[in-house]
Amino acid sequence: MHTRLGAKLRRLRAEHKLTQAQMAQRLEISPTYLNLLEHNQRPITASVLLKLAQRFAIDVSSFNLDDETRLLSDVMEALSDPLFDVHGIKAAEVKEMVATSPSIAGALLTLYQAARGGGSNEAHETPSTDTDATPGELSYLPGGMPSEEVSDFLQANNNYFDTLERAAETLWKEHDLSLENLYQGLVRVLGQRFSVDVAVLPAETMADTLREYRPLERQLRISEMLPLSSRVFQLACQIALLGWEEELAALTARGKFTTHEADLLTRTALANYFAAAVMMPYARFHDAARDAQHDLDVLQHRFGASFEQVCHRLTTLRRPGIEGVPFHLIRVDVAGNISKRFGGSGIQIARFGAACPRWNVYDAFATPGMLRVQVSQMPDGSSFFCVAKTINPIGRQARARPIGARLHRLAIGLGCPLSYAKEMIYADGLALDDPKIVTPIGISCRICERANCPERAMPSRNYKLVVDENRRGLSAYCYP
Image (tube, rainbow, N blue to C red; front, side, top):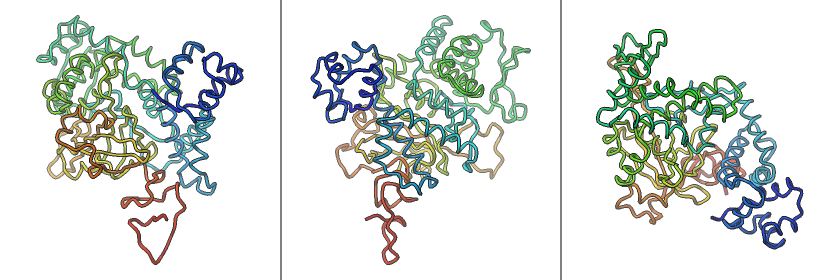
């Protein structure tokens, strides 16, 4: 493990009021070497991190480079707003601020989000109620919205909640559930354990409602418009809300959210997490994903789940000792709006606007239902293996669709670091080391370092815009 986290090391030393010589003595290294570490001229090795944990009683995870990288990306994106153009802010200045004063950088980000919440003209989507929703299902809404807090909470927990995984395993053991008859098994659980009847009702009765629990009648109503995978999901979600209230409350309290709405959204997200864990039990799903080389079709059929449910579940396989492939996930609509995001692979996903148009998740709309494959490379050289496919979300059209009505489509993008690509069946036969198959992408146009991208939609803050009326480059925004 090699990380460059000099600023965090300096802050730790300052908090303990130690000189470089004193701290170097505790870490059993020379003051000169410590000075090099603090100024990022040497990487902090695993042995140094271990001594930090032992000598200063810190959680090594607090020295997580991904957190600092994500904060830098978010602040850079916020400061790329034309609102700040008059200040001439340089990328190097932002990097220095994030490295030396992350708390101030975070506060600046909070202020920007609050300002956008008060007067943003961008479309804000209500929290998702999709039938295929697992914890990453909450839409990321700019402007300090409650669902934004929940999205950050899920990211901070690496989209893994061991308490809920164990609870799902307990449910399976106590009620002798099976994949072949999971729907009937969950109906039985609701009836015998909670005295709740399940009724599947006509679309005209349920209107736009997918699931409705009526506590006084002890009845759970499910729309007939839901496919079996979504019905099972909704049954399991209701079981979580009825049988694991204390666990949901305890996990929600860890988020320390600022609004009651954020608490409720988190509770829903965690209940959805439980539902996915019931449908796709951790150990069985982990082994099946590995053995099938993450063939999404095979996993869908084996576990009776939808494409989106399977993709979400893959992002949650983070149990210590039996981790799965680190995946990221993104969901977008045809206009480029991001309604779901989780950066488990380490990739940076746009936070305040559309992502890079060169990403294959957008290409998926050109070939509905077809799986698109892409090797993507960010400006910093990090590379990812990505697959994408469109879906027709049942949850957005619970009523029967009239003839001629517009078909609503979304696209799901799933990806992992390129080093894990061979664990996916979709990489078979591809020359992954061939630079010709690599697609250069970025986070968003405003902060992308690629000077002359032919698909650039707006100027980059990283370069001085050159306007030459006698020359037309690859895009309207050319740089020397």
